[in-house]
Image 1 (cartoon, rainbow over the protein chains, first blue to last red):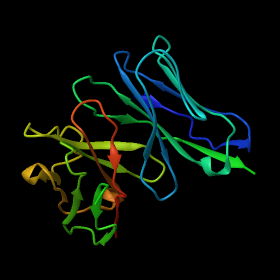
Image 2 (image 1 turned 180 degrees about the horizontal axis):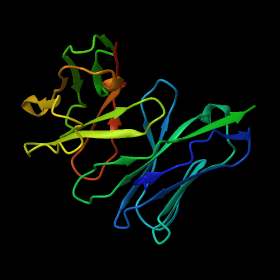
Image 3 (image 1 turned 60 degrees about the vertical axis):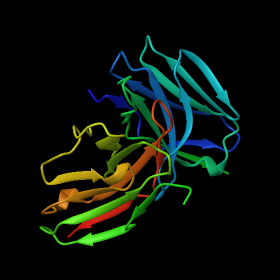
Image 4 (image 1 turned 90 degrees about the vertical axis):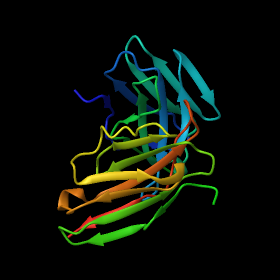
Length: 112
Length: 113
């Protein structure tokens, strides 16, 4: 079992819809969780971080964490074509330092 | 510059040659990381430097790979006797000490022919 698993997609949604991206992780003691967005040919950029159970909202983005189920998700409301990218889930399984383990990413396509 | 700088942006080399990849982190960032991303794959952790502590080399795939960080700033990743499977994008990232976001450079695309 991979440490961080994501559906590779592509996930296709129409403009204005809600995109839901999911991620599961295997290390139960993981404490920090991150979502990175990566445009084709570009480097990843951080869009959300979450550390405790529940929801965290930032603009059109909401991260959801359920440690009991070892599940973290990212919701994108009012999806725009510019949101089309690969979304990488990253987990820090070690509280000592930020050695992130990344999933393979979910490709999101938002059609106009 | 304001961001993490990597050079070269692209490198094509023949199998068996050695290559050096350079990373200049954000000023003031004490932590520096190297990751590798192959086509269709996630980011693979290679090595981590934090201040003056011994680096975490647990992700280096073989003894052909080595990295150093001089003066707590610039880092060089060296791959000796390159193989075709080394072809990937090599990403460097830096962060402030502690739990803080990683800032990635634009990467070096390495192609081994």
